[in-house]
Length: 130
Image (cartoon, rainbow, N blue to C red; front, top):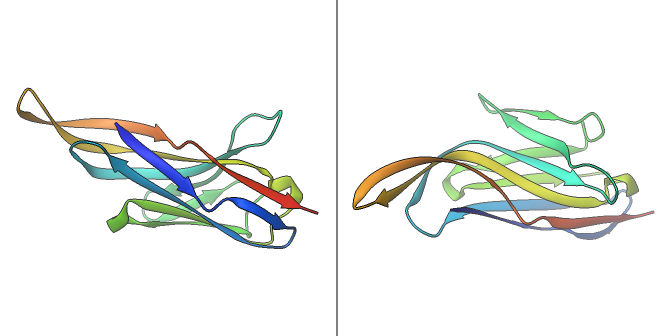
């Protein structure tokens, strides 16, 4: 199983910044490739929504509500994705989740296998005070 662990959340005043990190790891085998990573968020009483997603070729897409303020980036060698959040607003308050999809290598009955995966992190709380 691929595990995603987020960090970097916390309490910040409006106008401040936070940088979230998400590291992908496996208990056995290795991660062969990560095809895409994204950040979602879920505020109390609301549905989970996409915040930012990497696109093929190194680009990114953002929700209209964060465009120009948030930046998603990835460090491939560390299987890590970041979300730099600037000019935070109280409406950015939510639990932020990391999502990743790719291929992992493992062994089954002594033979090498490649398995597709899609994983979610446990979430990190971001609270923006006014």
